[in-house]
Length: 65
Length: 262
Image 1 (cartoon, rainbow over the protein chains, first blue to last red):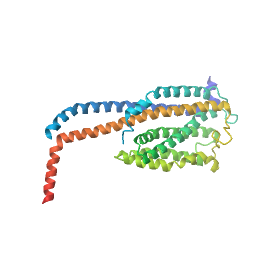
Image 2 (cartoon, each protein chain N blue to C red):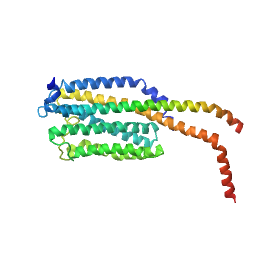
Image 3 (tube, rainbow over the protein chains, first blue to last red):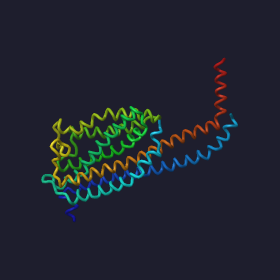
Image 4 (cartoon, rainbow over the protein chains, first blue to last red):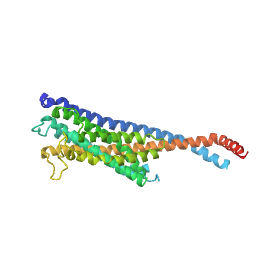
């Protein structure tokens, strides 16, 4: 088993490559998922806020014209 | 113009695809890793370090693949003003930049034990570093403008001009004397890599490609959401202005006109 981890003496280079690649790919995925969730929340909030405001405005508009 | 970028159309097309792509990514990379780390032979010269190849080559492939995709999207965005093309290009850039950086890092970690150096300024390594800078330049440029349309125009132009670097990366090992080995997979007389090493390599390349498409779909959705937020914020500001500042604006206009008539 330790033979497997030492990789013929090159363990640090090989495991370093695999670790950095795994960290970068997982981090990119997680960062994307997080900002996607945040953008969804912000969009929904804005939509409900604006929708709540709209009917009031459309009522007002005919009066003004 | 923005009818092509309708979120509903994009979601309808990609929603059923996403779980399959995610599953394929996991299975391909898991089996690829098994073969790469356990069930593939040692290289007769390089010993165990050949296992870095199963990350280095797929990462390099993705770096170039993403750049070609980004340049094509940039061209489509310039010629047909297709908003989804611009969104795809913007979504691709950070993924391609990540893979290019990984290619350089794993290459360094491979070069130190095998070549005895982390880095040399030879043609292949330098052109790959330029590829990374092109990605970073594109990302900086498209976000540098307040008007996203101007940003995408400048970015698309950069992506297209930079595309000249892609064949330079590919053929650098043939055109110049480099420390880097010549092409061993995509060559006229077929791959020169042993079949036992081709299998994990192919699995990892396919896995990385599927990973790219998963990320692309997610990032396009993110970009669509952000555009929707921007549009809502603008219309919200317009609402507020029309509610509160309509009279102010009228009085300003009246005063201005009065001044002008004097």
